[in-house]
Image 1 (cartoon, rainbow, N blue to C red):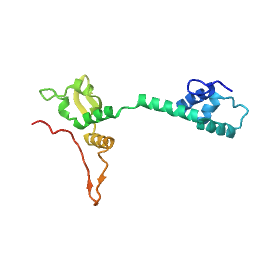
Image 2 (image 1 turned 90 degrees about the horizontal axis):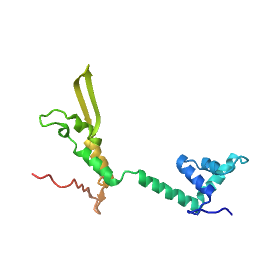
Image 3 (image 1 turned 90 degrees about the vertical axis):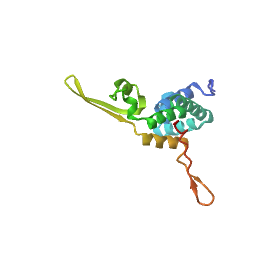
Image 4 (image 1 turned 120 degrees about the vertical axis):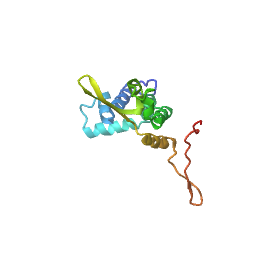
Length: 171
């Protein structure tokens, strides 16, 4: 019986799991980890399915998938912060006190600016365009993420939608 490692998998099972998570194909992962030269394709496919249905292998795949998603995923808090910046964005954020466009503010704005272009003739800049990300689209995405777009139905057929748009601005 093969030796089982830290997660209850044999070295070949662990290799198949790693290959599967990288390439996404059970059959290719099985071929990578096991000798399949004398097997028919249908046999390789069946054995790959059997391998990934084993409880220890399936659990390890899910564990590594969850770890990968956790490291790669933008947190809900981060996403809401970005969308809130876009939703609150105005052209005024990019202007100097005299009303001219401040390029440094455009460049450092992050997600608010969707596109920035400059038209030049020779060395002179003749026109600058700043296209902001859509505040309405950001608000819609934020509403979906927060569940604000869900309707709460009352027993008598009425529907109430609650939107918390934050505290009113100080006057």
